[in-house]
Length: 503
View (cartoon, helix red, strand yellow):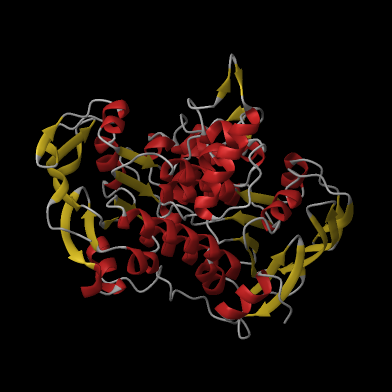
């Protein structure tokens, strides 16, 4: 129950970077036992605000109060001492360590001078039951999917003694059944008086879980509303400053498609223990979506097509010609590009600028007689900036790490389009992308398909698969269980097939 007494107050918070004000007198109040949604497009100031709360950044002005008492948060340790815990959109984990070691880091049980691994794994399993997750504690984090790693991060935070938990896009890569488990855990925490700041671009989630919503735009507070008293359209208008007709859950691509002959043909693709007998055809000008629940194996199919996972049998053909793909270089040579789910680790070089990331690995067309043409490079990059609507404060010289998630994703797209690929693979294409940029990306995919590009995407966002795909496939335990045309596809039908049902 919300008792009306603020647990947390952030008053008139100000912050600037390199002379650019990113937070302009922003205020926020969080009640005890409340779920407060913090909304805004990428670049609105949400991440900066919560990083100030966690001590990652120092505020330039304003005040933070806990229980009406002013506090100074200079570092994350200060926030932890106050009972503040963070689940950031960017996952923080030790990849070479196990699930158990990541969950119990700094608190591993011991027997004398040795770690009691049996007890440690038992404790880890108990924590995982908070989300009813059947995840083996001995597995290394680097071998987990993006979804599984995020689950570990959520469980680790929920298991701690927290008064305030900030969740930044916690379900960005979650399938629907896992979202329900997380929401159940959140409701249990709220009943214990724990308060949640919930950041998400999925507005349907806000309606399900949040009590109030605070909206930021361009570093300023737009307002705070009770969720029960506003519609999703109201919230979108507050976020972007005008009415948006694309990018929400009703965004759709016409059911007709210009697809003709198959650009990508996959026949009986098999990886023992992971997936088997996978048949996929994607025509020129067609968008095919693949949907599956946690651990279904659909993400690994994409990785196999790009040569990141070896296959045991089966064939891959591009434009009717069989190709051998055992590594990403061969995939690229065959005309296949991949936009990965974890763009910051696998898709971008964060300390390079926009120009360098777009033309990275695409230098040959920009060279003549062994001389790299810098002016041609700049023109090519500017063309992609204009075409994809990439927004950045300092132009193409801006380092990638300072771009919003949506603009970073557009840079990854630009790189593959610059490489003139025939087939584009996308893994969670709008993970961590705000509602406005999501609409831009959908529109770009529609335009690219209209120009003849074959697109195969994997997404755990069921609404995304339904809205952006001309045809849809479902995967369960490494096998295809459903094939839907746009006219045939329904939410219930895809969920049924993805859960192992037959249609």
